[in-house]
Image (cartoon, rainbow, N blue to C red; front, side, top):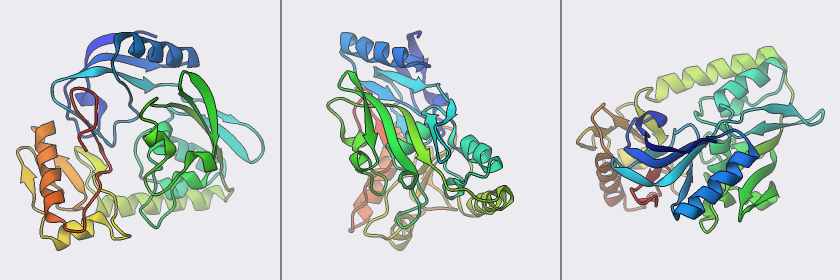
Length: 290
């Protein structure tokens, strides 16, 4: 494991906003994970796991933290019905590879990022859709300076939530997940993937964005509440709400962290029902803005 200093984070997130990490490392083994945690403790800085960067915005200055990315991405068949996937595996790639083997993860089509990131935020297709927890048997993590395996119930999954989001005292590093995936004819799976991708192309922007910004509220999609409040044209500096989907923030190329924060605050102030931010807005001290 190599600890790098002053590493730009802008290109490591899909929204292309952010300054630099004081420390940065890519972790390819469990030993790397253990050494990274020890390093962060020695330097007395937060450790921030980063997946594909598809739901994260960093402040534009120096982030006083150790930002780590899991690069391990092996997929191992554990028995006839389960497989174990390392956290750095690209989720869209996994879905396509499994489809060829007749294993159906198609309901997660269109979700960007890594498997680890998807587990952390229980990624899925909406408040009433299928989430990744539907397939999870167990998750292996490093937390409290030891390796632990959580079964599905212990992960405390709910809409866009997991126990891993709440382990702030000892932020976990998700290493791998064991999945039970239903079988289906490969041709049918690939057709469903194609259909869902086309649906996403028609309804969601494909530019510099970090995906859905807000969680649904009381079962009502956030985009609908934003539309109803007349806030679809909200903009600040180089960041604005997508014309195609009102729950997406768009960076026009010159957007900053502060621009994005101001857009979010404007939306929050204009929605009496209240909206909870789904994305991670990470400040210079390594803590969350929202």
